[in-house]
Image (tube, rainbow, N blue to C red; front, side):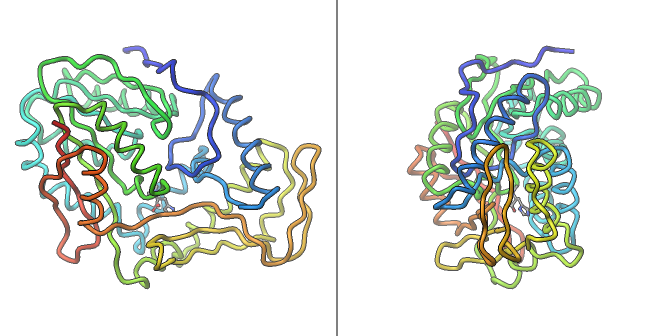
Length: 338
Ligand code: AVI
């Protein structure tokens, strides 16, 4: 098995600013992550903004719940994006050319990258970047067995902050892959910053980017308020995780999952709302919450095709073709970095 490359210049501490998924921790990263989680949760409970990064959703239980969300009838993004990718894979492969190297931001669903690996002509290398070494190794082992001869080199790094990649092989183009609308979990200025850094890494290549589109608010509302309550459990797991890992004493029954579409800001907001006046202990500190007070846990921005193309252009990309589904729920963008 090839060794995991660790991007040593990545700052270990986790910023309190919002950012997308990628936080389940393993081995030595655990203490740093715990310290980041404790610090950021404390800052969120002290206020005044009362918000915490969604990256803390993804411990093992949170990742398991997210996988269940992706299978829910109401949560269309995963299903629709996979359908689009299956239909445009050959066109993407043609643009990528022979012996391309795929760099995936987040060791995401193997189902999605498989669609690319099957269509691409003799892909030279696959570099999944994720903060979770455990998740990376599992994905790498599966893909090495499935695609004989494929060079799989996991990179353990927090791509929402900065990242360093091994030198390009020189044989084919470097193609970034950022599916799942994880870009939407960044604040707009963070999304621009991420795209600028991705542009720098992919010089001479391109980025394949999947983003969710602005649509009927009821459709969006249903996707984040599913009937089985899996999204509610995913949101509340943040508090359960704090109890497990930080010794906090949240009574999860005293918090309500609250998700709504903020139309002027074109984003779903997820909150945990206190059902009554209560006090919570975290370490030596106690925090008081009023009835109805909320902890803001996630933003999920939705895009227009033109808005996304303008954002990508501002980051230095040359926007290419866009693929959508017949209902225009989701979009996959080819963005040239040459
Ligand atoms: C990972 N991310 C793109 C998901 C989203 O839709 O923003 C996370 C999620 N939150 C609730 N449901 C799914």
